[in-house]
Amino acid sequence: MAYTILRGGRVLDIAAGTAEPADILIEDDTIREIGPPGMPAPAEARELSAAHRLIHPGLVNAHTHSHGNLAKGMGDRWTLELLLTAAPWLGGNRGAEDIHLSAQIGAVEMVLKGCTACYDLFFEWPMPSRDGMALVASAYAEVGMRAVIAPMVADRSFFEAIPGLADALPPALRESVAALRLAPGETTLAAIREGLRDWSFDQVRPAVAPTIPHHCSDEFILGCANLARDFDLGLHSHVAESKVQAVTGIRVYGRTQTAHLDRLGVIGPQFTVAHGVWLDHDDMARLGDRGASVAHNPGSNMRLGSGLADARAMLDRRVNLGIGTDGASCADNQNMYEAMRLASFVSKVQGPDWQNWLSTREAALAATEGSARTLGFERIGRIAPGYKADLVLLDLDHPNWLPFNDPVNQLVHCEDGTAVDSVMIGGRMVVENRRVLSVDLARLRERAEAARERLAAANADDRLLYEALAPVVGSYCPGLARLPYHVHRYGAHVE
Ligand SMILES: [Zn+2]
Image (cartoon, rainbow, N blue to C red; front, side, top):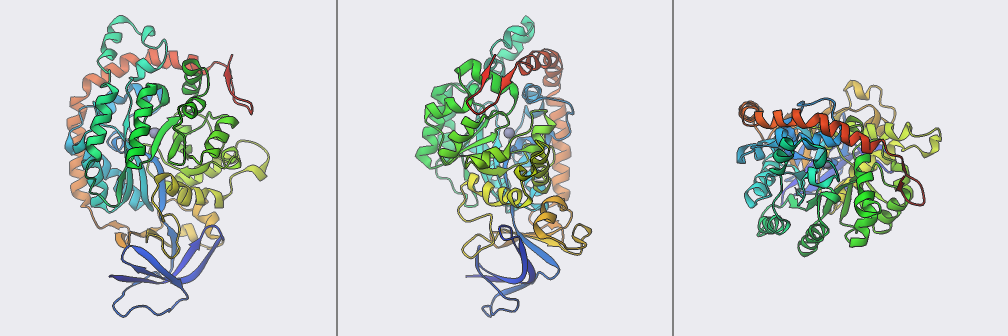
């Protein structure tokens, strides 16, 4: 047994809104005791000073995509549909080194910015593999970060998923996108099952992400749900993210995506909806009644012009609310402080009834305990005995905290990650003095630059294909998004 005691810090209790001076005794990877300053500790305990530090529970990113990290900054104005069109250019021709590197860059960014765990929906072309899953898992394990990694899968391409879109393309382009056809569903499911065999990672766990409901046949969604049930894993899907998706859901299913998923019987406590911008109140009630979660990604929703999710209406219907950054090609940084702050702000622009706005307390709880529940890790997201020692130490001498008026308001509205001094995950120091201890950043930079050069050359044709497709997708999909779509209490319909 190894003991550590953090002495002299102020320990944040988000729910209570307090940050009292206290010492924290950690045994192996778990918080054992929180007591008054100077409390006794086992003689062999390693003693760490937390003087002038606010200790908050590690932030938990409920939704990201590790493959996006090598594509950061590659585009500016794109909708979700244009981004999906760009996917072969942004993520094509990735080898083992790229899969690992892309995940590791994101993990390093997250831990440096106070995030200790994430839900990563990673993509591997043409389908997930045992090696790919192990590469992503080891990228997190080497950094020392906790993660749930979910292969993002479908059995229909984007162009097959939106009715009428392929027909709107000129014949030559229609042929090009036919090459983007995905593997048959059973093949993909078998590949995931193979990847799950003898899972050997402890802080990294698997899940399954049927990416967008109408990109998946019903049989495929049910196959994913069966896999999740067999292996006791989470299910995560982009639902009602863009208006195009919402309208397409009605066209394909005759009801909302959520109503359809509910009919399939796949919504339960293990199910996470990513985004949920276009959920109606019935959808939210379905999710709440089944104990499901929403991963709210306000930065991505604004960046892609998807809209503003109504977190208050979700909470009112007992939906578990988590907060995420989304991937680097649509959000673009992996900064959970910013995501929390935006969650607060996005709620506040949705109406004059300020009593309905998300409070900083609710935003901070969503980014810790709420997100933790989506990941399914037991006992993370809170500083309490029996919880994992996933702790962030903020420098209270940093201007973000001068003066120190209110811990929760300042955590959500003032902090931007620049005051992060140290980060502990599972009792192990991963960041100290603002430096990542586990990974050599100079080496990471060399690898990233080499990958950038190689991938830019390898994906040059896919970039041209994107540039040819963008005018068509960029006019067809906004056409769908201009259709009237009423989100109201008694269900959604397209006129
Ligand atoms: Zn996403």
